[in-house]
Structures are given as structure tokens and as C-alpha cells.
Length: 565
Image (cartoon, rainbow, N blue to C red):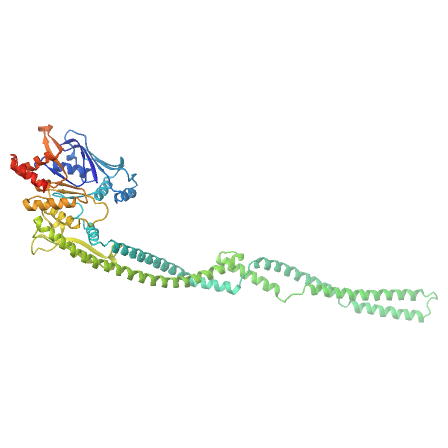
């Protein structure tokens, strides 16, 4: 709700502070008195387009400040949050605009500098203007669908459709991600398969490189040792037979010595026996040495070509490691990783099929919800059109026809609010085609049409309603039509705050509050003033509106009758 408007140096207003209450407030005055200046100032503070002509002559800048007291659940608070502006829900919301004489302007929200565009967004959330020069809200087709949904009580269906859209969108994203994953991994499949086959063929084991290197070193040393043992065996080869030959030769020598009658003391024979015994011992030792050498050779016994095979295995492992850009030690882990990646390809394909099934289900659920919502909107549109048509005749718009066009769109234009386009359309004359609301030529007619629509929607909307401003909605009408306008404005004001600029006494009489706008002074001292009327003053003003310059008792009586009606 708008609770205050402060105006400084705007056109003919030097300084004006207005307090505004709930319900219907009427602004009256002679033509040219400056009623539109009040609306211009309000528009200035809420982000409307402005030029230097609004700055009062002789002033350096014009300042317009609108003070609102939005309900705690008003959507304007979310807008402030979105824009990063500080606020407190239990405090007033102050919108201010400074317009310099050179046409430059500055915008403020709760004394925080911001852009004019932010003021405009906030203003659109806080008020609607329907009048001679502009209609804010109804001409924007984006407002038609939400209004129809409120009228038809379709919010639960809208919420269900939005949830179905969210699920469908999430399913599309999941399928897209899996398709990308399958495409990426599929491109690697051939290479992974080849690499894994090489790893499977070699079957590398942890710690194998170290073990093979150690075995290679041992085998290399063993080959050299066996060569030395072979030389020893060659040296020992035939030693036994030579010793035996020597023993036999000594034995023959002893026998000859004995038969030749050697010295009696037998020293020669004795020495020959000693030599023969020594050779016997040599023979025994030679046999033992040969056995020991054979035993030593057995200690170095290994599979033929073992060293060659060990080196081949080691070279194969190191060659594959180089090809894969890894270490031999990491080959077993790489084998596990490659196998897992190949399994992931298969798993991704299975997951993709499951996700595609979920996507088809989510799509079907959304289309069902969206189509049902479109049908419900069409039904609600028919009811709303009937209600509006019933309001048009009393407002002297009986030749006009109104309809709610709900066009079902193609799937590629679907969205969280459904897959239809909703538009309010009107035909101003019999036989004329339906068109946008902007096709209504007269601003007064458009304002009355807005009133008819708002009257049809009255009581259906939930949550805080915006301030509604009707500028000369009664233009060109009087009598019963003006009375019908007043009654509908009064009805609207039961659930919303309404300002009306009017020349009609029937309309002014329905207001809870009444401001009279008048000019005072002369020449460059001419100023616009606003007087908040008491009940007695209201009677006099309404009588003036009825009678003109000469106010009669009959006019006063008629004014009282209107106010009491």
C-alpha cells in the first residue's frame, strides 16, 4: 500500500506532502489544475520515463518520493533480495527519484543508490496505471496468463505443471550427460581394448620388475660361475687315471728293486711303498675333489635359457610401460583401471537406456499436465470472457467483445508454466476482428475496459494487490455509466488501494478520501495545491462538479444524495 507521496519542485508543485490511506481515493479539480502532476510525480518515483520538463521553472532539480508499506508476503521483497538491496519487512519501503534540470536523474531505494530500471521493476510490482496516456500491466500480454490462472483457481495445476517441467528438464540433462559420456568413452574403447589385451597377455604382477632384475643378476653371475667350474672339471679330468698309472709304475719299480737284491735295509722298497701310499691318498683326494666339483656344479643348475627368458620378460614389461607412459610397477593398477573404464562404457550404455526411458516418462507426464492445464485455461477463459462481457455494457462498452485466446504451442516452445500462449483480445465494433488490447483507440475506453476486467477478477486474487490508478476512467460518460464506474471502483477498493482521477461526481462520491487539486497565484508564481477535503468540503466539491461555477442548494442536496447512496 502507498502511504505517502512527497513532491518537490515538480512542474507547478513546489512542495507537497501527502498521506494516503486504504480504499478509494478520488482526485478532482478543474481541467488544467494539475491533477496529472500528482500521477507524474508518482510515476517519477517508480521509474517511469521522465524529462527535464518536469522540473519546476527556476529549480535545479525535481524530487519525488513514494513511501510504501508492502505486506510481509509481497513479492517486492523478493525483488529487493534479488537486486541486493537492504530492507526490513517491518519497515516502510521508500522509492525516490531526483531529476536534474539537465534531464539527468538518480534513483534511490531506502536511500541506497540504484538504477532507474530497478525503480521501474519495483514500481511494476507495486502499482498499476490505467488511464488516458498509458496503461501499465494489461497491455503486457505476459500479465494475462497469471491473471487468468488466478481467476480460474489454477495455481495447483500450474504448480504441478512446473514440477513436471522440472522433472522433464532434469531428465533431459541426465540423458545429455550420459550421451556425452558414452560418446567420449566409446571413442576410447578400441584403444582401451587393445591396451588391456596387451596387459592381459603379459599379466604383470606387483613387485615383478624388482624380482626379475634380481633374478637376472643372479643368473648372469651363475653362468660365469659354471664356466669356472667347467674349467676346474676339465683340469681334474683324467687326474685319477694318471695317479693310478703312477701307482702301478711305483709298484713295478718296487718289485724290480726287490728282485734285484736291493740294500738289505730295504730303504728303497720302503720309500717306494711310502710314495705308492701317498699316491693312493692323492687318488682318494682327487676322487673327493672331483665329487665336490660336481656337487658345486649342481648348486648352479637351472633351466636352460632361463636367463634369456628372464631378460625377455623384463624387456617386455619395460617396453609396455614406456608405450603406456607409465612405470612397470604401475602396470597392474593400469590393468584394473582400463578394465573398469571398459566396464563403464557398458554401464553407461545401460544407464543411458534407463535414463532415456525415464525421459520418455517425464516428457509424457509433462505433456499430460500441460495439455490439461491448457484445457483448464480455455475453460477459465470462457468464464472470464463471460464475466467481462457482463461488465462492459454498464460501462458504455456494449459494442465491444472480449475473449481470452488460449493457443496451444508446439513442444519446442513449452515451459514451466505450460505450453500455451494466453492473450486477452478485444473487438471494439461488431464485425471487427479481435486484436490486442492496444487496438482500443480511446484511453478512456481502455481504462474502463481495465476496470471491467479488474471488477471481474475482484475477490479471486490471493495475496497483496497492487495500488491501482485510474486516470479519467469516466471520460466521455455520465449519469448511469459514471455511476457504474464508481460502483466498480468502490468494489475494487474493498480489497485493494485505488486512486482515481475523475471529473465525475458519481465517481467522486464513492471515495473514502477526496483530494481537490487547484492552481493558486499568477504568472511565474502560479502553483498547484492539493487540499484533503473534509466531509463538508467533499459535499461542496461534488456539488461544484454537478452544478459548475454556480453552486445551488439543489446541487448540494444532489451531492449529499450521491455520497449517501
